[in-house]
Image: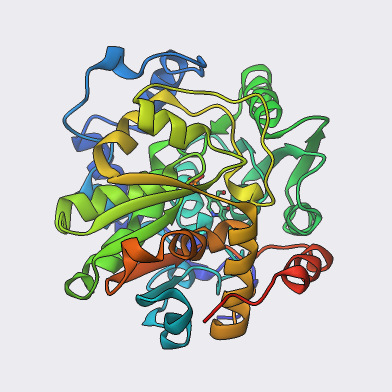
Length: 382
Ligand SMILES: Cc1ncc(COP(=O)(O)O)c(C=O)c1O
């Protein structure tokens, strides 16, 4: 199948035992998306709210057997992505490094895994219209997954979002509404559209399908788990980290799960460290994919159960990481995808002689910005 090609036959007709398996799992665990809708209402964003009255839940909202079933709902173009040791990076980083590559697919990020699960459920008798807020990658992925199933997709994004991402959302046939503010304003607007127009709101990281779709990366990692010690995960709203973290804690608890955020967008990391939702007034980072200000309480609850650490990195390290991935791995990545390398660069001693996996989670960049960033990056010392 050609990437970017519309609807695979499988996605179009997708009937089958596959979607059915995920749906059955959802019903068994009493976690149908309908019940999630009412859950969402009760979990509506309330900045500063304590998660679960300070009581740590014993289990995340995720379920490993459902995650396994989710694989069946996801177009294979997003699955079984390369995982390989990248020796050329190792002299500069002082540890053994493997890359889990999530950029070689039609939307150039891991977000297609979650939107495939969402869209397959909707195609199976749910609402035909759907809206989401996005910094760009979720919207692009939902546009792709929705197009293949004849869904009516609206994406709300900041006017200041990465132009290349917005262009792709339009090109994939979604309606794009821009707001004069940041991602949090886009979230408010998407929720309002869902309320007034009665369409399904997809809330990244809160909707369990987005987490369980991302969690399929974790399943792919555990098959190789005997060979690594830690996994570095870009942290935004938390779907990726809670998803992969859930599977690793369930199936490979010895692997250290480390989340990475930019110093310029630290809300979820501060929240994880303080075990309560901490919001910020602003973000200031080139890593647009992870630049949220208002963590979702239920996602924080999950993250508290599965993350061993959450670290913050400087912008210069993110750019150095992008440059290293270009020079030594031949990969053009967006800033969020370089967070793992940035974390190693900032704390070589911590990772020395260990085997670390970093998830290279997106490559949607404006080419001029990319050239400017990596062109100005000093060559990392080897
Ligand atoms: C490239 C990239 N990396 C990381 C993230 C963060 O993922 P999450 O919001 O699931 O934490 C995103 C979110 O859109 C992204 O697009």
